[in-house]
Length: 451
Ligand code: NGQ
Ligand code: ZN
Image 1 (spheres, rainbow, N blue to C red):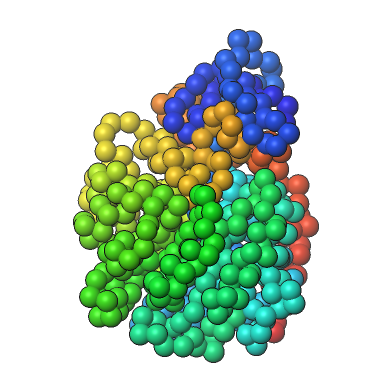
Image 2 (spheres, rainbow, N blue to C red):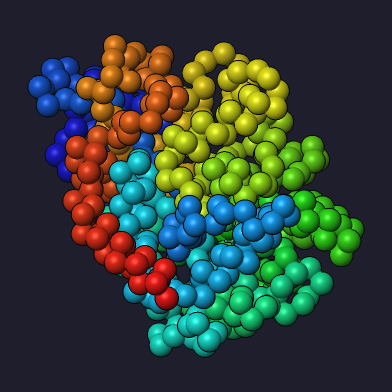
């Protein structure tokens, strides 16, 4: 990366005027320094790239295809059946084409890293591929080819519910015996690099017993290992967990496992005050996925109470009905506004709502991804965005409102340049592979939908 001169740099905590930043060979930032004479090439608005904390890449290809009402009782659970049927059709080549297109879109939207919650492991008949990591390899290849930073979270998925029932036939591509899972993770760790981190995930409390989680954590422990799981997204999970364990899901998790800052709880939609305080105290991040949670009819995360408890959160695009950090953040705040019939809910005192939310994302990104991302400070990754200063939405912007304009001002994308580890991957709003990725994706979808 050539040194970048910025008239205004938001480092994830605060604004600085007239800065120059530079990255080393490994894509890490040096100390940002004050630029006295900004050259003509200086950019106006330099901000941290966004970490996408929750993704199921293959679901991108289903977006818009599951919106036809089948019955008055359509729900998350009927969507899930549909999703299983779709997942049953995918080959490693298809997963690569879908993930590549998705990651191009993510980069163009301003996501510079993605946590891939990867549970589609085996062949259609449930047998392991040779090698068993074939589908994970497709995800890694898509990330490396597009230039997005990846935290790959191979998912352990073992049973069909709290009562210990076996996986359904349609879930057979997802399941592992514990030893096979440990072997998969060990094998994947060989792919770790400066932009690929291997973490782990447990699909949910429904799908993995806590005793097994303890066993996996003991076997795979390493400093800062990201550990993600879905939790309390639907009321039915709360009801079933109460029936089996006499406690609500988040309470049960916090009681049974050493949840700390390495953990990311995905959704955590249905939580009471005590659980909220418990999550905040643990230092875990909540990955809120507002567009998917809205699409699936999950409910609204109680953001205000969580902020009051000092909790950490980030965002994820999850099922990818939307691939836009801006749309996630709008929905995050608008959901709260609609409940409370007030404005600017994502912060507890006066200030910029957009800036407050972006500060929260910057603060949680490193722990949740297990990588040095989020803040644009010395030693952190040079994962950054240049916003389009020439866009009408940014006309006469100032430090007080630049981030609110990006988040709240219309639908024309304002991300002009994107760098990951100091490497430019988007120029003038366009990824270099936009066209070939879209063509391969369209061919893949034609094949899948014709079958
Ligand atoms: C998933 N998706 O694993 O893709 C889940 C649905 C489940 C979301 N939670 C399946 N959005 O939770 O059992
Ligand atoms: Zn999910």
